[in-house]
Every structure is written in C-alpha cells, then in structure tokens.
Image (cartoon, rainbow, N blue to C red):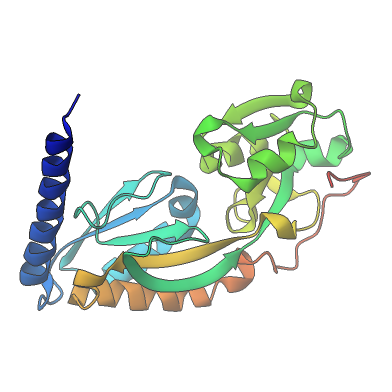
Length: 249
C-alpha cells in the first residue's frame, strides 16, 4: 500500500507523463500531410457495417495513410496517446476531448426474418439481452425491467454479437437501427423506442485537432455520416414484421 507521499508522487508522475505525451504529439503531428498512421477507436457495432465502408472510402482518397482500428466497448484514452480519433455512442463525451455530435442513435426491437414471420411478438417469447460488461447500456435495463428473467435466453457483452444472435433466431432484442436495419436476416418487430436514444460523437484530443490526418478524417467522416442520418436516427421507411401482436412497453 502506498504512503500518502507515494500517492502524491504517483499522481505527479502521471501528470508528467500526460504532459510529455501532449508535447510529443504536437511536435510529431502538427504539420504532417497525407502520410503516416491514423488510429481510430470505436465499438464493434459501429465498425461492423457502418464505419468500415467510410474508412475504406477515406483510405481510397488518402493512400499514404495507414489506418489502425482499435475495437472496444470502453473508450480508449486519447490523452495517453492510445488513439487519435474516437467514434463513440455517448451522451457525455470526456471534457478533455473535442469534436462534434454527428447524429442521434435510434434503437428498436428486432427479430430474425424467419422468427418474426412465424412467431407472434408477444410476452413469453425468448429474448436476447446484454451482460454485465454493458451494464450502462439503456437497452439492457429496458429489457430486463420488462421481460421475465426466464425469457432471456441469451446474453452478450457485444452489441454486434447480439445482432448475430437475434438473426440466428435466439430471441428478440433491441439494437441500434444503424446496425439492425442493415444486418442480414433481421427485421424490425416494433417502433423506435425514444427513451433508448443515444448520441454519435466524433472525438479527438485538443493537442492534435489540427493535425492534417485527424482533421481530414474527421471532416470526411462527418460528411459521410450526414448522408446516413436517416439510417442512424431510425427514419428509414421499413416494413414492420407481419404478425406483430404486442410490444414491450
């Protein structure tokens, strides 16, 4: 166990580390052109079908930039130089970061195409939910406050994995529309639930916000996302599965 003096020294060392990272970052990246590496952190659900095509289009226009994507449901520390840009679903970005809100993220209930056309959407049916690793996810508490524990047949700490499980027929579940509406084998089985709404943010650290690579990607990504706001905000004109007899409310 550290003494009070040891705790103070550790805190000082951490502050010095962050200062060194900040200075190094500004010196090494501030004036760089279209060369080098850009590190992006995001979640699996955002990366899978949505962000990867945007990155591919950006890379086609900037062949000299090597892209490294770090996937995780927890935000990597931009302050500690673990990544350059974060694409995150959050309503509370860290105060140390700068960026912009790109869109509101809508959530709705989904089922597999086969299941939704043969089984009524009603109480007593199996559900897919989220495990403790995603305890802060609104959809987890929303489902588990309304569905019997006996009816939750599958849990996962990955939204992308949940989409695959639902498509495989393991149960109904809530997904962001930007994932559920474009995942093969899925169909909406109910309307968008407004209280599950989240926000999509594009973030970086203030020390590197003027880096050519960072600025170029953030500008490109924001423009690409703007064209897909109807998908993200659940406004696509999609049919709801036939045979719906009820909803979780």
